[in-house]
Image (cartoon, rainbow, N blue to C red):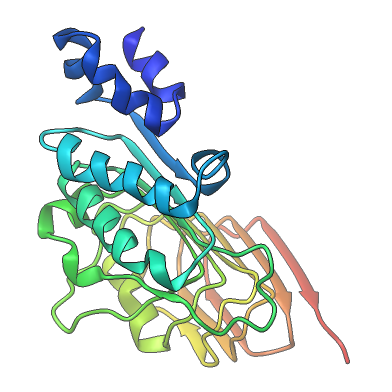
Length: 249
């Protein structure tokens, strides 16, 4: 019951629970859900004050914490980058299985900047544990020795900038079941995966800058595409639902 109560509290209230009892402090260590939300955390306080709050939490409260679901939802600002990096370090240390980084600003038109997600901060254990990941308004650029996410089941990308080479990380996501790449994802190349994805059941690519799609997903059941008429090659023996919407001039 205490875990459920804590999972519904704003972050500043979670921090204050440390004065209640040892029991509450222990429960906080296994909080199943942790959400940093700009709308709630910055309400009634400055962005600077919100950063102080999150800095205090990360620096003083994270040791030994297990977080099942970790979400960061802030509009991207340059002054937040160092704190975003710290949140990535926290997620790495907290044994998180479900990660969401949604940094899409309210007014995104004309914005070419993206948060360069620091994949180099992830250790082998964190990439092994991660099962679901959502990235919004980030730049994907992988380190040369990055080994991928072998147990990742769901990947949701929107407003993401990447290269075809970096997105080929999907080749190392052999457990992937659900992939969505929508809303102004900028690849400007072919979206392809060199190795088979035998577990992939759902694939959605919509309103993104690509020049083609090539997947070997023998058990894919649902494919959704919205965009310009480019070459599409889907190798599947079990495709039951295909929804294609080609744009015209």
